[in-house]
Image (cartoon, rainbow, N blue to C red; front, side):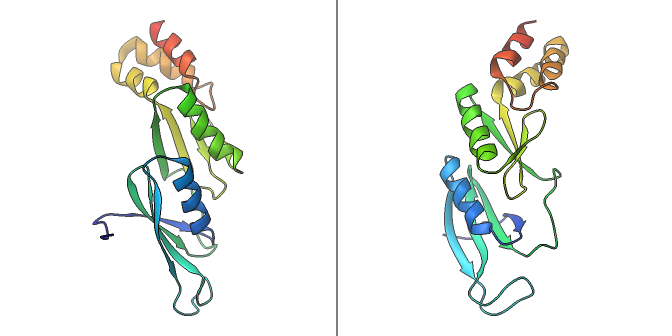
Length: 159
């Protein structure tokens, strides 16, 4: 596999491989392509421990780095996954939250490694793009939700 020109590097304490394998099992067009081990002891680990993991999440190339506990994830970075219906929204949300993750507001959640995800039904994105009163109603409905309720957003769009 050729190295991508631009890759998202995600810092993990020590679980980059477990995270990458979870993403590969959860999202289509996702896979783990390489696991690289440290050639010698380093500040975040010992020789032969997993140092980096090359993986793809929903078509986006990523590199997981087991860098130790120095840096933590924040909502300043998130994956945004567009969903087509409530079933797909539920599947991704439940996979992340049900695997030790945490619910947040407005379609946001965190996986058990602290990486933020936006599970965003296309109906919400389309409502926001429509603008005007339709966007306002959909936005106001979303503000009271954790996981997005597709039916409630569709009802808000209609007024």
